[in-house]
Length: 204
Image (cartoon, rainbow, N blue to C red):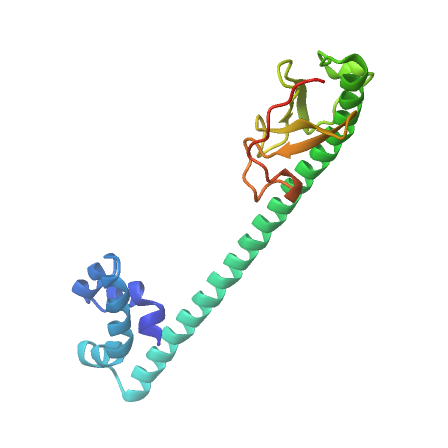
């Protein structure tokens, strides 16, 4: 087992050069490792002068212990790294969710402005919203051709990326908004922002 778990070190230590270099070849390397694992104990017995059978068995147990410890440490580090990455993804998704909620609140005021004035506001200040934005939002812009709201993020790792809110009429005088994921993947944004495109909008 030690020969298989520590196959790179084992083949180098025991000067099995052909097997060592074959390990670096995709697919071939896997089968080479399996072969070393199955025959390594025999090779070790034949290639090295041992003081006694007990000495040989003690050395093989040491290789096995090192291999098992190495595997355990690798899985532990992978688990820690995976957990850290999952936490980062959750934190990033939470920031975007807050940004979407903030943009939805802004869109209500913009929708009311459109219904009342039959035109698009030039900016959010024109609908009575202050210019101050949360730190994670860089800007909120209103497209003057179709009323689409562009929300640009200011938080890493999504700094500079944008999602959109697209207007559409619900009934005669009510405007609803559809969230488009824009520069994001579906994994980064809430489910409500799964859309890639929407229908054209024109003021009634």
